[in-house]
Length: 411
Image 1 (cartoon, rainbow, N blue to C red):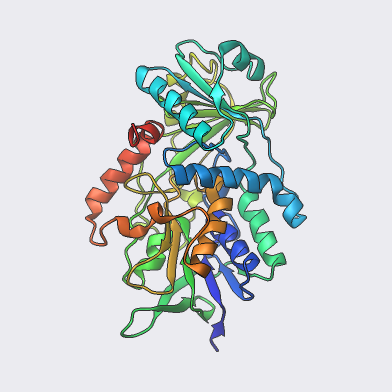
Image 2: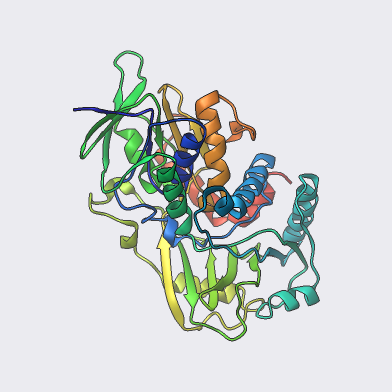
C-alpha cells in the first residue's frame, strides 16, 4: 500500500530537519522527514558549530543573521531546550588582502545593521587570553556571533518538527524518486519500507544528495569534501564565554570546546569523496582522517594560537560537507522536475545557516517567493551537463580558498 503525504523531505540533517519543521509551521499538515540513518548522525555532529553573520553576499548575510536570531529565540518558540554560547567572533588579517577583506566586511555588515567593528589587541587579550596578535594587521569582532554543540541543530529541529505533526522515519533509505511519465514531474519517493506519494519532494540528503537525485536522472552539482577538526584536552583559562577566532589567510578557526580549544580549517589539498564508490553500508564515520593536516594548520597559526601544534587531543573528527563550484549554497526548485526541490551545497556552513534557510525555503515551496530572496542559490546557475572533472576541480578550489574567497568575489 502506498503511503501519501503533502511533502517528503529526504535527509534529517540540519537543512532537512529545519525545512520539515518550517513546512509544518507554515501550514502543511502531513510532512514526512526521512533518513537512511538516525537523525543528524552523519556530518552534522562532526561540524564545528560556528556562526559568522557577515558573508560575501547580501542574501547570505541576511540568512546568517536570521539564523542566529532564530537560534536565540528557539526555546521560547518551541519550549525545547537549546544551549549556545553567544561569545562573539573575531576575524584576523595577516596580509594586505586580509586587511582589505576586514575593512570591506565591517562596512558591508554595518550597512545591513550588523554590529561588527574593529577590535584592538588589548580587547582581544581580555576576551581570549589564549590568542595573540603577533603578525596581525587588522581584526573585527561581531559580538552577536555564537557557537553551539553542532548535533543539537538537527536534533532540536527534528523534535520541534515532530511536535508540529511531522512524521519522522529513520533507518529508511530512499531508493528512488517517482516521476510522472511524460511531464517528468516528481510525485513521490520509493524507500526500503515502501513508496510514499507526495506532490513535494525535497532532496536534503547531505553527502548522498546526488545519489538520491541521480536515481531519477537528475544531476545536482555538489561534491562531498572531507573537513577535519581537532579538540585539545582541557587547558587552563579556557571558557565558553570566549570568542571564536578566525585567521583569513591560513583558513583556520579556533574556539573553546569542552574545556580545551577546537581548531579546524580548510586544507590546501582537500580530499573530495566519490559517494558512488562507497558501499551501501558506508557512514561518515568511515572516512579516512589525517591528524597531520590539523597539526599543519596549527603550525600555520602558531604565532596567534601558541601551543596547539603538539597539544594533547580529546578528539579529532571529520565530516563530508558538500561543496559547490562557486562556494554558494544550492536551494530551491530543480528545473525539469516539477515538485522537486533541493537544499544542499552546505559549503561547510550549512549548520549555521539552516534555521533561516529552512524558513525561507519553506516559503519558496509553499508560495513561490521568500522574505529573503533565494534566487542566487538556484541550481540552474550551473549547467546541467557539467563535466565531472571540472566540477571536482572547481569545488576543490572553492574549499581550499574558503575564507579568502568570501571577499575575492566582491572586491
